[in-house]
Image 1 (cartoon, rainbow, N blue to C red):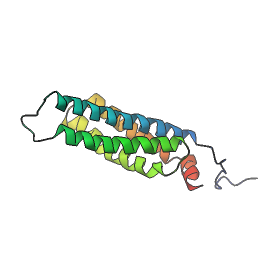
Image 2: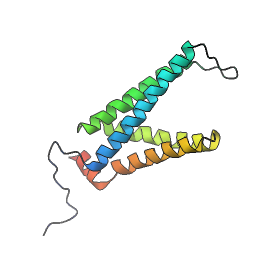
Image 3: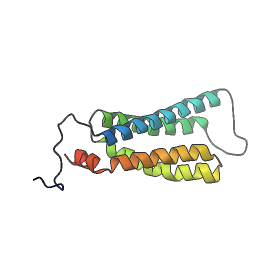
Length: 138
């Protein structure tokens, strides 16, 4: 008989389904951030200026490029069986949870808030499943 508490030895090239799901969702999240950065740059190039807020479209775009690029790189790393991306993805999801709350409650964009929040929760659950933790610890 085998003891169920012992970790399952995974082949070196095996990526658990939960990690693949988390990597896929995080890839989409990162690409959305990069797409929004492009939108902000184009918007600024067309001369749009916010009258009530002192904010730079270019500066915000740079922030989204940094965050979106890092999240996309970490997610692709997970999909390629690289464990280093897990921590960055977890931090990003923890940041996205209050963003989702603000989108729903503060901005009244409930649909977007629910999508962002649900995707963050799914990624966190996938990365903290037992098989994902055993894969990470291997």
